[in-house]
Structure formats: structure tokens, C-alpha cells
Length: 83
Image (tube, rainbow, N blue to C red; front, side, top):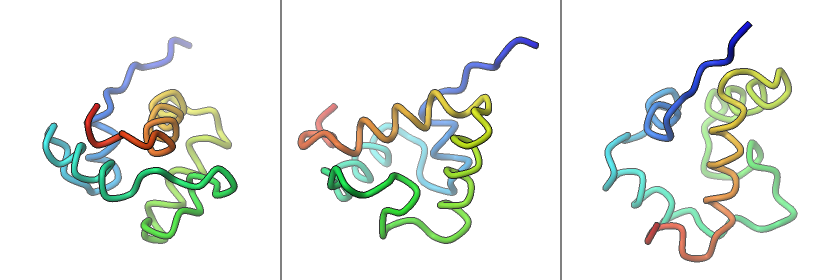
């Protein structure tokens, strides 16, 4: 079975966040850098449903896992809002 490619903006839409470039930049700027000892899904800014979605996608190595990994990396960057 072929995996689907998902865009960063589509993940933001799945999470119920603004998915335009400005919205993504603002979210990253407001929540970065995420401490190295905090798992992505355990970050304090997620709602329970957002955290569950992130956990599920990573655990199942689902279609979304690659873009979730990109989000994780982006949130760990000190200059994430300027990407």
C-alpha cells in the first residue's frame, strides 16, 4: 500500500489550527522551542484531542507520521517562527 504525502498545512488543519503560512509561523513562534525532555504529544499547548491525534499517528506510523515528525523538529528549533 502506498503512503500518502501530507503537507504541513494539512496537519495544522487536522489539529484545528490556522493552516495558512502566517498562522503556522505564529503557532511555531509562540510555542518554540519545545524543551528536549518534553514529548511532542505531551506539550502543554495541545488540547486532549490534539495530543491524542499526534500520539496515534506516531504510534501507528500512519500516513501523517512524517509530517508529525516535521512538526516536532520545527517546534524544537529556537527560530521556528522565522522558517
